[in-house]
View 1 (cartoon, helix red, strand yellow):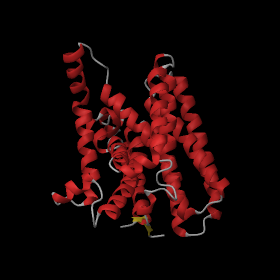
View 2 (cartoon, one colour):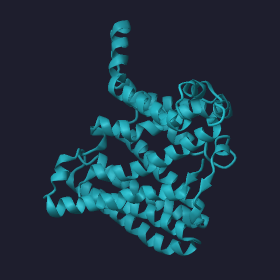
View 3 (tube, rainbow, N blue to C red):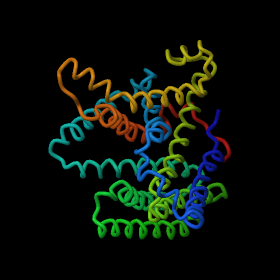
View 4 (cartoon, one colour):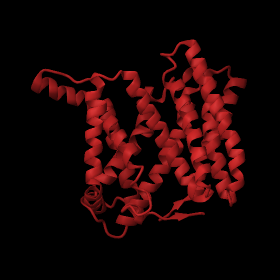
Length: 333
């Protein structure tokens, strides 16, 4: 099985579809859709179950279910766990919440856009300076867009306007950079990917400026999540398709469940259980055993830890020479 670049490129169709939806709603329905949508995707349990958290759970399951991967990265995983506990756990007693939130937001945006630019790098073949220029302009514009979306209720009107102005300026700089960098792309597919990543940021910024916050987050989230799953599924099929190599895939093989659907199904199920029942179950146990409760122990604590570990590990587990990369090949180049 191969990761298809043409399939990955097709995911960006969510951009023109979202823009068409915004323009239709504005012109024909007096913003009825905007008023009906939540101000943040996190307001919908269904959205959390479908996007964001499942691929985070899946990536952690992928590492945890293979002893050879755990052995290869044991030192890094232990060190990062210690850092998360100290900085985001103990540090939360001294560091203001807004500072921790901004750090997490920046890391989230960097992770999402770094994945998309990293995938496109294979076909764009930009010089290093051009690749990093595109990446950091995208990330900078994305960070201010993200802040404007998720902190719009806590910002003063002038602050919100300033955040939007900075996001627009950085987005404009990204467009100019793309015009300059496109001359270095040697093939048509790479040109499409270069502009697809740029338009993803442009569309998110524009939709955010029109206060369609839900769609502004949905576009990059959908592209990012499905791209990630394409790697996970390809890995599982190529490693376990003929002969299951660990207990999880031996169990699912005995149930005649194809390896391509094991990780998606399991990650969606676990996400639903954690989001819907995790906090209540933990607090029931803590109340019964210790007469105490912990605020969002699962939905904030555990899932937050898994998300930070995902951001960290995805930076190196798919690079050339990693044990996971042996099971990945590409098509459609």
